[in-house]
Length: 236
Image 1 (spheres, one colour):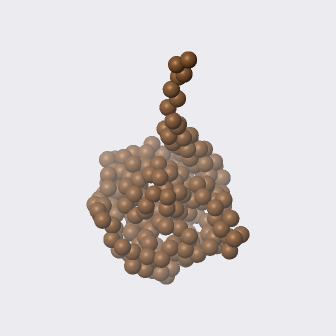
Image 2: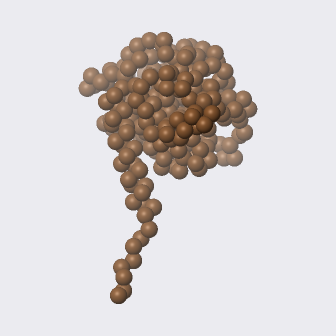
Image 3: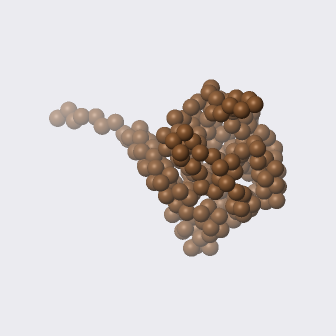
């Protein structure tokens, strides 16, 4: 138990590079207070610059990852997971098989269209999933959230911190631990840190992992500068 605690403490406020299933399997059960994550949508996505996302072509990882996420989440807590609407059957099957119960649905309204087919795509979506019987928040969020454009500089599907921070505040207390097994650009980790929570991120792609880690280092530096005491010049 002491060895497990030591490993867990070493992971706090870090982003680990590797397979999230294998990494989560090494962690003790019921150690995270909240899961907020944006996994691959299973749509084989490629952006205008040709960037792709690993494991976005098939769902072999989906059920094992959801089982481990459920195991790590504390009892009577919640997770919020983005998903691809065209693959909702696969996501729902994985969540229910793991033990999650859907208790809410969020729509993230964008000011721009990311794609046009029969309709123009102006939103992203996520499910609020419960483990056990979580308490209701004192001031529930609206289920429609504005999502400003992030610029996608660090990742092809980069989410803005402004849309994520209210979710972290609503479902955690300061100092609690947020897990993001599909870290991408690090937006969820940044939102956690900026709201006074701890985070643990996992990212498979080495390039995205490096970019996200450097981003969080910059966030930590800004927070440290902001909290530094003001030095008053000596009057001598």
